[in-house]
Image (cartoon, rainbow, N blue to C red; front, top):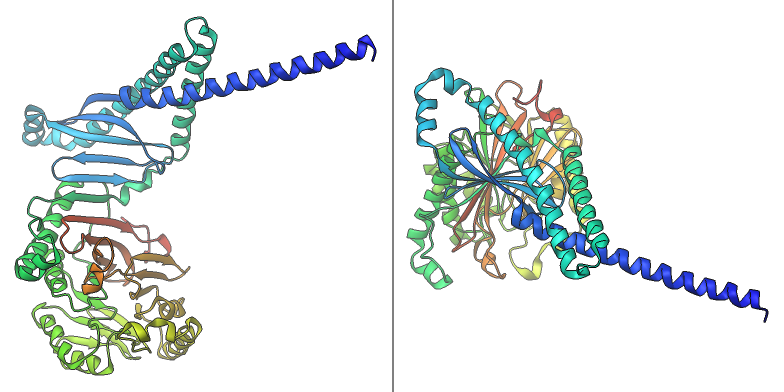
Length: 489
């Protein structure tokens, strides 16, 4: 082997060692920048700033989905999906400024300009927070670099601090690029209320004190409604006298507490009509027929379709109650709306005869037959079915489709039709206690324009399951193509 060859091979070996060492150093710098930057943001990315008549604290918190949250302790919080990114903006209202609030309330001119003043204060606070976040991340990475690389490696420390600063700029730029100002039209309000049924814990206590629990749960709905109206100052759709309010419930499954919730929502929201997408009962027996009696005291029309746990005898018992409209393949006009619906083709009251006995394609075929019948009757405003598979077959024949059955709320945009699948308003009855956590009680208030009869917005109401004390109201604005004659206010 010649000397030239040996020198060439030695040079390649030295190059590989240097490249490996350089890669290892680069990885160390990246880790220090990431860890130090995150710690710096968590510890130092906080500012206190006056926003209008209140004192606030702005901070950044790790969050995969981004977004912004306004904490109004002890009432709850308002969240909006304002942006994407690994950090969310949290604005905590810490204190009311009495003098500023008094001036704003006593001076009409000051009160009129309060919105502009709050917007300017908030903008200044966010800019200040961005600068603080940049400094905090840079300082955090620099301090960690001094600890890891020692004092003799100032260059690596500077590289780590610079990388953290660049990371903050990139995250901030991504938040700006994904900023969604329209998200303020769909706030999510949540809160833990003091008068919640916290004394009701075990299943034994629930049974023994069920009357008290039902009354407390109904009061919970009333309180969260008031708090939602009082604390949400975000620009959202506001119902008025020209709005039809429809309450969508489903899958009560013999839970008496559901009637207290329904009665409270009807009263608090001024509901014009209740639509029940089935499964009032568990076994469809004659003894369960009395469960429908509370509908007499609601004071509003009640529209119903049979579920797979409801027998034909159950449907006949429901039909005999004054004020209930049973949808059975004909068009019915209720509260100014044209409804069409069909009962579920199955009767599967127990686990041995559950839904797997009727294949998905059979349900779809049944839905298509009902859709053909609807096509001959003419267009309607709302098509109703118990199972979403059946309801999907009405797509294009009604702008709004309602269903239940799956005990989980979801929304499906089918083009010219919107399918709203409701959760269990009865918390799936006793079945809701079978899992590790109780099934939540869910219902929704839909706002429809009285002239066009199109959906404008809807509120999803969620109450913690048996024994829980949480409550939430989520406002949604309907897609523009379903809004009926113009943009949503």
